[in-house]
Image (cartoon, rainbow, N blue to C red):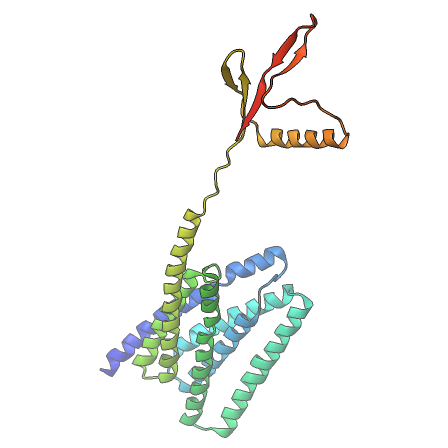
Length: 299
């Protein structure tokens, strides 16, 4: 029975390595944009420093347990790729962000990890040392899995899934499932327990994405610009008893007419008008009065 359990644990460990490998590579598009623009813009280095610290902790724990090679392989790759991410961030970040990142590295990677090694090596021995480091890994992993609550809150507040990529949420959920069964089959609560929380938060993010992405589509469909009716001009000729509609004016023509009106007003030019209920007329060369057609605008 133990042999079958170990085989299943190995299978879930391999699957966990594959999914976690994809998760570790997910920031590549972000850093490609940073490389093209030669600037980190509004990106922060906290996720990469935290991921680096987490990988180092799990490697130390796996070395103490001595029967978890798959945990060592994926976290070794994670430590390698996160070091590259942090290095690229430091290279392209402005001075203020660079100083903050160096402080975080000194505080977590050098100070925090160094203190954990010193305390556990000198104060604890044997199996107890592994248990203490395991509990530290468990607490830290719980804090990492709680971090997406900020994104969840932002999605609910803005009713937009712009800041929550679906694929990353899916792969993080799958990763939590694989590592949960890996820890369960190895009877290691320090690996299994935090991934329960990771699975719950992963499902929550996927559900929120499904809800608010549909709402965004509905809103986009409902938001239609009102149609603008272009005003036309009708010439009424009382002698011919007919109405003739002139071609519709374009927006540019309307603007030109308004400008011309303002220009005329500014020059204080007086224009003769006639009442709406009378016909206007001008004299021709024979001194005969010719009635002019009345203009009527229709919106």
